[in-house]
Amino acid sequence: MQLLLDTREQGVSIPAMSRSVGGQLDMTFDVRAEDLGTVRDIVQAHLCLWRIASGSIDLLLIVVNELLTNVIQHTAADGNGARMASLLLQQVPDGVTAIVRDQDRCPLARTASAGLLAEGGRGLMLVRALANDMSVSITPAGKDVWVFIAAPTETERS
Picture 1: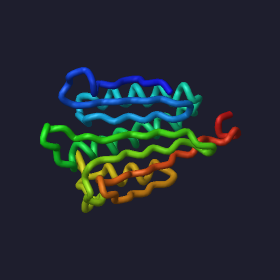
Picture 2: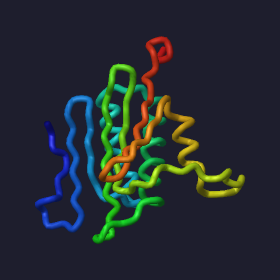
Picture 3: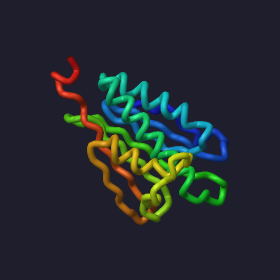
Picture 4: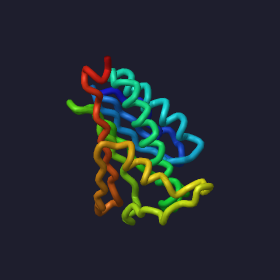
């Protein structure tokens, strides 16, 4: 197991941790808008390392970004002002699963139809359109949003 980042013992106010094992990446961090680019870079590097097709990587980056943006926009900060969440990516035989766990027990809600010029309100619709499968589970600690992106078949890669 490779520990990529662990700030728990470094005197920082917000813990962050990341581990990578084989075809699995597990990150726990304070979700902040200014860090989404770094998270996407880490996710992309792992997916490339796992030799995931570029089309699937693009889909996963969009989906993960939307799910983490959802955490920023729709979950309350804790007493330290943090919106802690975890991201678990797993390479599976047919593709990649991503699970975003947050501390908010409110289920995802589809926004009433967003106007043509609206800047928000389409995230969940976009995730459902891009993912091959999606599920939400309310847990005692919050909720888990699970998505699956299928890997292309050999004929689709050619």
